[in-house]
Length: 391
Image (cartoon, rainbow, N blue to C red):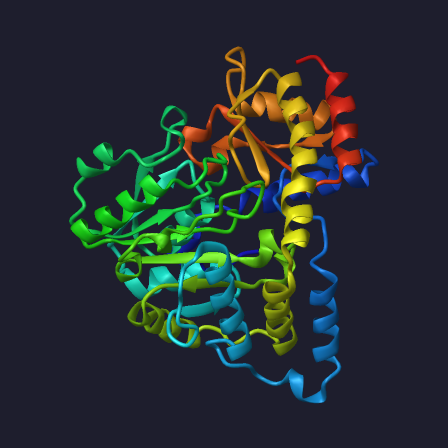
């Protein structure tokens, strides 16, 4: 097509999301009858609780439920989110002023960046880290300053290294504990140092916390630190902990001023989600018992984790057995020149799709990530296939 129309400059700043591109290739391979087993994406394959689904159906049948909903969320959902934080983390939040429901954490990254950063401001982004921290920062015209997470430091921030940086233009710092992709768990010492760091440098720390209930017996929140709400924001999500990735229900929590700024941005971009989703989400927060959580988020993933560790061992990868969350992160053997040499061989010879760590940053270039979001029989079949190829 011949045209003089050109996209905005920001389009050239980012690439299509890795999984969006790679899944097209996987779809072509499946169309050719190759039956690819995907152990790549962290999309829970189990349903939410029965009560959650029943509530959605109940509300959907109400004629009055289908109109526009408040951008700030229904009182039922905000109250349920506050109860969730009190029950699991011991954190008290005012549901009217300290909570903002989100259409997932990706949306929250957009809104928070717009609320706190002008073009040209700097943001601290972990390496390795969730790619959206980088891509959305580029789209919105902020300057990315990477900070290192390393295996020998438990994938925690190196505060000595951070203090040596010129932080005068930094507005936000993105953190993610329990960490994705590395599985490094939250530590209260890290949270306390983050709050101190934020206050001393006048930086807003945003902690992304969707994995704290997965394979984790001690869920923690950055907001447990006294004074954290003054300078920090925390995201949480129902995608992982409640098996609701497609529902797009998340939240952010902070002080009333920060929440009001985020709401001002959000209200000009989108509207409240369907009332049935909001009330069903509230039901999920309130009715998911300890027994449901233990079975869905501990026992099921524990069994799958044992199988994923077998794959790591077959591939000759090393890993930290204390990591938590719904992935297993492992370092590839030295004889591979790069990680795709391994992941592409596994994909095309064993027909198993696993994630190369380079998509999370340069510090992930020698690592792979295996998702636990597949039935045990699928993971067992993946083991059989991988055992048959030459590694």
